[in-house]
Length: 52
Image 1 (cartoon, one colour):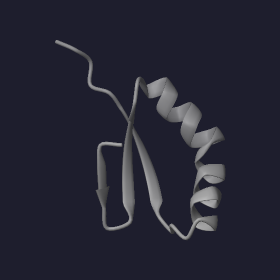
Image 2: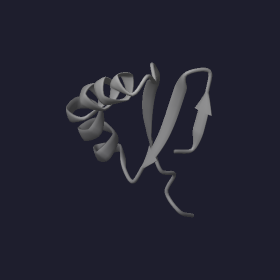
Image 3: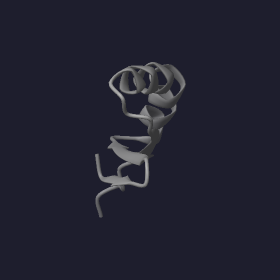
Image 4: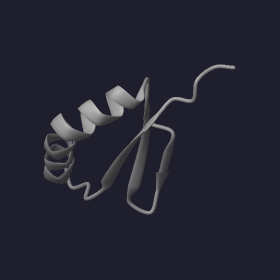
């Protein structure tokens, strides 16, 4: 996790492909699990910046 602000969690992942895959397949189950634990948050996945 790279940021946690005002109910928005920003999670950095390795690539744009990973962002797409996680968002489409895991985001909903993750949000449900977090909500069951009393955490009503939004989750945003972002791709890691390429090394220069």
